[in-house]
Amino acid sequence: MNSQAQAQAMAALQTAARDPLRAAELRRLQEQACRCMDDLLHAAQSMLAAADPPSPLPGGGMDLVMLRGAARQRQGRAEERSELALALICGALLNADNPDWDPLDPATSSEDGSAPLLALLQTDLGG
Image 1 (spheres, helix red, strand yellow):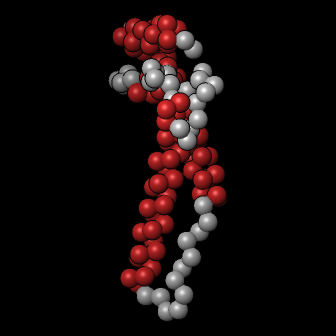
Image 2: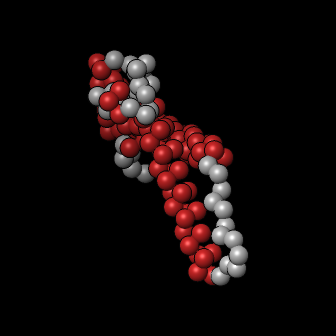
Image 3: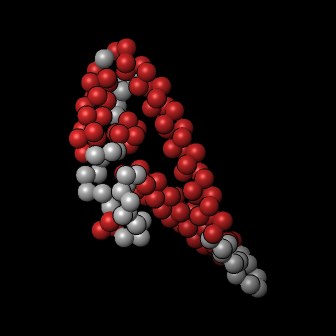
């Protein structure tokens, strides 16, 4: 989507959000988009978790302190995977029309930073 089409889509979204009849439809679309985004996030987190080898438990005698430390490490890795999944999905949405985008190279990211789907997800529609 070129920048003019994006601007038109954003303007239409803002106009519709102020119209009570269209705002209800936008809320339904927003809820559907949120469910889809949740599904994408869970799928991406699952793929990242499957590619991440499990942390080995320390050998020998284990005590509560060691188990707590291992649990904190697993939790930290899970949080990192969640953040990475969100960054990849948002990056993909922002760069859907950017054939040069490389998720490993921030310099290739789209500069306008607008995506109608992300705008829909972020718009406060009330109700």
